[in-house]
Image 1 (spheres, rainbow, N blue to C red):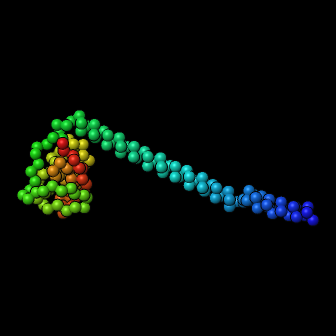
Image 2 (image 1 turned 90 degrees about the vertical axis):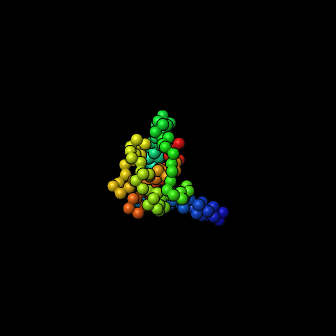
Image 3 (image 1 turned 180 degrees about the vertical axis):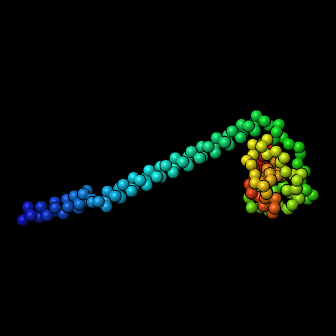
Length: 149
């Protein structure tokens, strides 16, 4: 009786382990899909790191250029429109037309290594900042804070 009981106990513990190890076609498919997902995730991470590195290098290049050509970034004193009081702005803010009048436009954005703008966009000086503005409605599209020294 004792042998039968021990044999039954051994079978009860071994059968699930053997069944789980054997798996089946579904288990192999799932493992393959997991490996594929891991590979895809690794590739995505690699691309993200690559893009971040390029951005970081571009930022460092721009900072180095700014340090080397500081005289370009020391523009004349800024005098805003009547009643002007500087306050930081963010994309989406809408300026009054006086703030993006022609006299505040940056004539040559390439000299400052700024990206090209569309036909209805202009770079505008606002205090020490440079702001890309849609001149049709005054909406701020991009802000380069503390741009001028």
